[in-house]
Length: 254
Image (tube, rainbow, N blue to C red; front, top):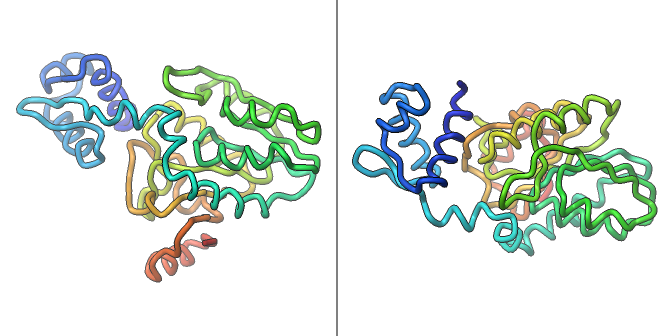
């Protein structure tokens, strides 16, 4: 079992039970207690849980933060700013891919009024609903499993759909966090699998990241820094970060 998969299972158990012990996890996951203590310590650093003597409890703020509706309300003006910048990069008759993030949903709201022909693929139910009435757009909803509290379709069915698409010009994606070492990371390992496939299928990967995402990691990586072509952000990053991004051939727009 990969680390990201194990930590996702820990999160699922926590959401069900609200409290777990290392011994319980070791028995359920068939993993050593030493490994699990390392997992819990790292997950606490990421704000996913709170360590207790012999185990962990759920960080109760996550229930709201994980909700698509709650996340869609946060930093809304920043998300709109990023989306207006992203819109200028789209050319008529392109085939573009939108992930199911709340940031990219704001781009979908702009594309709702786009008056040129596009083919748009997305695993975001909210984005598909925004786009479906525009006669200029061909909208393909990537199928998959729908989790409680989510508006993202995920899983193997979605990757099968992507396998049948010959060429995707642009992928617009966001993330829970971004570091140069880990790249783009997210908290749902199942959606990460699909987003990794999205990255591989796209000619150009564009990350929409407000300034709060820089320097933070989540459970699993879906795009290495070397796979990112352009980062669009709302504030000028430090000169050090800009220089490091340039060394990786990542363009920055702010």
